Image (cartoon, rainbow, N blue to C red; front, side, top):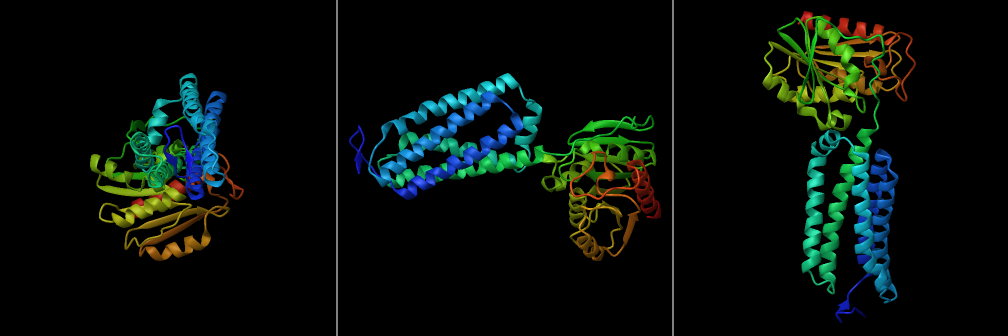
Length: 374
């Protein structure tokens, strides 16, 4: 037991110090990931000060627990370094002026919105506990540190998701794509609406994982030219797994006789997952470089993939055939995984021997064959 200036004994243990180190570690991970996205020297300096503040407090607790030495400076520095660090972080945000729209889109989407709310609530509770608890008691310290640990875990998970989704393939439409005079493209909530001359059939499209959704604009416009109006869905963090049910809002707002749902890669798998749970709403499923993982009953399913696709799991593709009683498969000779969209080459993919325009045209023909057949 060591006496502080208030003469109350400080009850510290090694376990308590170790537990206190984890929030500091999680905070450090969060700052590194944000720094990789943000690229600001001022932010980096502020983050380092905050991390040093937390690390200093951990060292202080270790000293109390192991040697009984109360290095007061290691405890007192926390309030100054932490405040100074956060001030620099705020200044960096003012100087760099990141897009408020992009930031809000990231923090307000599920599941990051829930994780961040829990994290902020935990920090608020931390402040209340810090003011009211008797920190000379071991139980009080354990309670405060447990709340801090949960808060930091939630925040770092949210930042990891945002960071992972921020590293994506950018759309590269090329100068050869100039749009269509017969298709009206309208921005809607969470995506784009391609309104062609057709009036009775619509297709909802989920983009591939970590691919900018606008990379599929040429495919959507050309399908709309064929009489199939299209809804291109923007996914949270460019990952369809976090927006599986975004088709619901589209179906409830727009009126069409026939609804088809489609997607590329992970987007295709999530589209199939949505269709499996909403078979009464759908007239067919179209999978591009993707496969089903749940039963689709007698719902018509079209799977299109390239012969040179190096990303698609062929074993899963074969297993997916059993999930539909009305299944059609088309292999595009010379096509690969990436050329269903316009975003350049994809890591791990095979080399295509046909142009993306040729692959897109064959894909559209296969889709129209399915729709016209039904």
